[in-house]
Image (cartoon, rainbow, N blue to C red; front, side):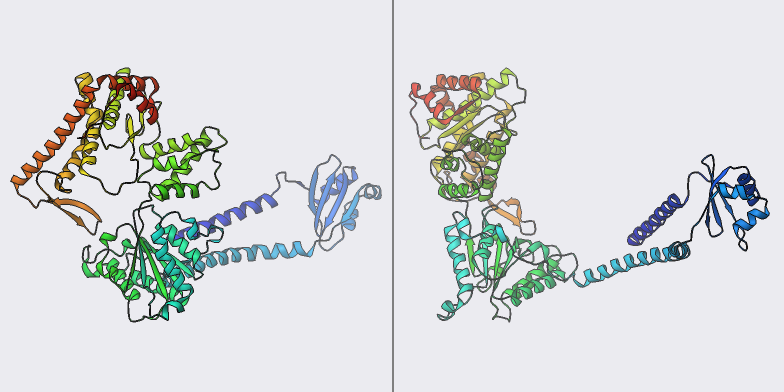
Length: 610
């Protein structure tokens, strides 16, 4: 009914517009005076007529005053004969200019045909629109079960393995797939079989889609790609139908590569959702399993799939014969981050002397996507500052903006709050600098960013995959530094330490319950349950007694109190250093790492072990 109403509306609108146009064209604003033949004869004898135009039976008359008039003559007689019979003299005839106009054939036929044909054309146009939409609906119904699979055509945006920094092992694994597709005979002669599927696993932003595009660039075979979410519809059987269509399209172009992005949208463990075996998502997964390792084993189609949640995938999807290869993409280390920054610096006006290594040092835990965003943010900040090139400080500012948010210099704070913030952040930095094995401080600031009133940035000297109990205790003591500093200098505490206490409490409980670093021994407590259907943790099962729960709470309290005592002792011992740091922060608002350690040199602080 909505399409019919729309067509009816446009039809009525079209008729109204046509009527208005014709009215504007054929209706004149000033209607000429109509004269009878007797009146025309009198005016001609009186010398009031200058010109008469004859068009069939219609007379267009020009009067001496410039006015227009119209009249009609007799059909059977000529105009001159009629006027003579009405008494017009020969002298009056000679003063008037007579012009005879022949009516054109177009005007004649147009006057007959337009009123007849125009309504028919409008009605025919309406029916044409209605049938066209109905035909589109029929075609859509027949194509409902077809997949929206796309063939790669990157053109100038073609990506090669050389354009992907880091990921050396991943590129080696995928280079074998590319080589198999290019020269399969070398492998088949040795009895090797083509791998069915390759699963790309890694955190978001590590380059799963990018390296899949690199496979497309390196291989000279058709590369089809689709998102797994496009398989699933609310209608039963559509997902399975689209899966068959996608694999059939790839098989027709074999050897080929089929890339399925975010496969966890349909590949989650079966039996964990709502709807049981009739769930549409499960039927789609069943069809993918059949296509990967069904009765047809002669195909030369390799399936690449990407996911950042391999733990929730169905075991049948991961068994050999389906996804034979599992390629893990880790977060880049410092060398890889430097290379990624160099790649994303292409095409940017970077100032001479920029050290991207120093930027890489400040970005532990950043993914490739984060680093690309960092370079873009640096360029935006330089443009906002009306600079011609991007400087080192622009990249440093971009790092802090991504981690904490933009600076909020317009935020009005009282002198008292500024002093509390300075001592709070100074406490964090001084405790970190006084602990042996703690990460070095890179920057201290009391300028508000995001939700933080100030921040202390400390970064590791080298990449760390494992962390020890001592490092954790150093971190907890550093978190307690702000709380202890406020209590020591003001005899009171503020809400500024709330997030520090939250993070310290969570980390302390992990030491006891998850990492086995407490006096309770090498035991973990609590079993984390995860609902596969939701793909997230929903709670922790308590698999220990109430008596053990009390011991866990005691251990958590011991760790927290011990860390707080260490932080308070450091700050009491080096109270003058704390005051110097706070005074400098109040004056400058920001202290870089080198300046911070220069401030501590006169106080000869010796690092202690927790």
